[in-house]
Amino acid sequence: MDKTKIIVVEDNIVYCEFVCNLLVREGFRTVQAFHLSTAKKYLQQAADGDIVVSDLRLPDGNGIDLLRWMRKEGMMQPFIIMTDYAEVHTAVESMKLGSLDYIPKQLVEDKLVPLLRTILKERNIGRNRMPVFSRDGSAFKDIMKRIRLVAPTDMSVLIFGENGTGKEHIAHLLHDKSKRAGKPFVAVDCGSLTKKDACRPCWLFLRTRQEGFTGADSHQKKGLFPRGGRRYAVLRRGGNLAPETQQMLLRAIQERRFRPVGDKSDRSFNVRIIAATNEDLEKAVHEKRFRQDLLYRLHDFDITVPPLRDCQEDIMPLAEFFREIANRELECDVIGFDGEARKTLLTHAWPGNVRELRQKIMGAVLQAQTGLVTKEHLELAVTRATSPVSFALRSDAEDKERVLRALKQANGNRKVAAELLGIGRTTLYNKLEEYGLKYKFQQP
Image (cartoon, rainbow, N blue to C red; front, side, top):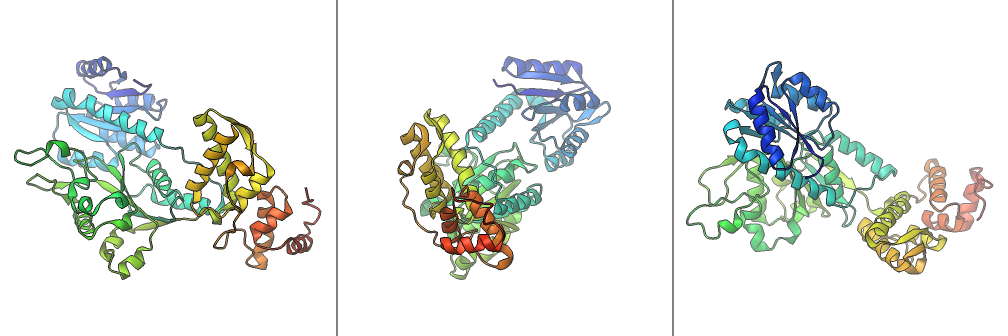
C-alpha cells in the first residue's frame, strides 16, 4: 500500500474505530476525526493524495459543510460520504460539490475497501502516463489561459489539432485542473472502432449481467457512461464516429440518461465529455458525415493546439525534456545536442509534430548513448516548413520581436536564424542594422 492516508470523520467513536480497523486490516493508513473542526485541522496538513471518508451528520456541522469548505479552499482530495440517512437530495448535493460516492453505513463493510482500491488503481494509471511538459511559448500561454477558464466548469470542450500535437495531454490538463480531478478519466479512441463495434453500444454504455443475455458475463464492465460517479470522458478522433453511434451519443448527452444493454430501465449519469479531432467538423457536417446537432452539444468551448512548426520557441525545450526522459528509460547519459543537431531540429518541418519529435529524440539518445546528440543521430533531413511558422516576418510592427526570438532560438547563429525567418542572411543583416542589433548578436 502507498503512503495514502484515509481521514475518517465520524462522531460515533465505536463506529469510527470499526471503520479504521477495517481499513487497517486491508493495509490502509488511517486518521480519526470526531468533529468537523478536527477534520479541518488534519486537512490543512494533508497530502493531495489522501482520501476523506466522512459521516453526513457531525456534532458541529455535516459532511456536506466539510466538502464545501474543502473545495472552497482548493482541496481536491477524493471525498466519500457515508450515512444512515438515505436522503437522495443530500446525495445529489454532495455529488455536485465533488463527492466521489455516497455509501449507506450498512454497506460500508462491503463497498468501502473496493471503492478505495479503485481510486488508487486509477490514480496509478494516471501517474504512469507520460508527464505533460509545461510549454512556455506564446501559443501555449494562450492555451493555458483557456484551460484555466473552462476547467472548473462542466462545459463540453472540443480540442482541435493535427496528429501528434498533444491533444490528449491538453485533455489531461483540463481534467487535472477541474472539479473532477481524481475521478475516472476515460479515453475512447473512436478511430480504432470498427464499423461493427461503433454500431454496438457496449463500448458506450454499461452492460449488466442478466440471464438469457448471451455473453453478458464477458461484457459486464464500465462503459463511457457509468452507474453514478463523475466520470471525465475523452473521445479521441471524435470525427470518426459512425452515424448510429452519433445518434446514441446525442440522445445520451441531451437527456443525461441511458439504458444499459441487457437492462430494462434507464439510468442517469454524470459525465463531462471532451472531444478531440484533427478533422474540420464543419466540413464534415456540410458533407453529411457528422451531425450538426451533435457538434453543437460537443462544442460549448474549443481549444486549438497549434502544430509544432508554428511553435518553434518550444522545440529545443521539448527536445531537452524528451532527452531527459530517454536517458531515464534507456539508461543513457546524453548531456545535450551539438550545434548541427540544434540547427537540424530547429529547421525541420515536423509533420508529425510533438509525437515525431519525441520519437526522433528517443532514437537519437539510444544511438548516442553518452555525450552529445549529433545531426547523424537524429536521422532527419533538413526541410522547410510547408506553412508559415511563428517566426515568419509579417509586418514592421512585429519584425523586431520575431528577429529577436529567432536569434535567441538559434543561439545567435545568424544563418540558422535567417532560415527560421524564411529570409536570406543579407536581409537579416539589414534588419539587425535597422533595429540597432548589429553588434548585439555577433556571428559565432
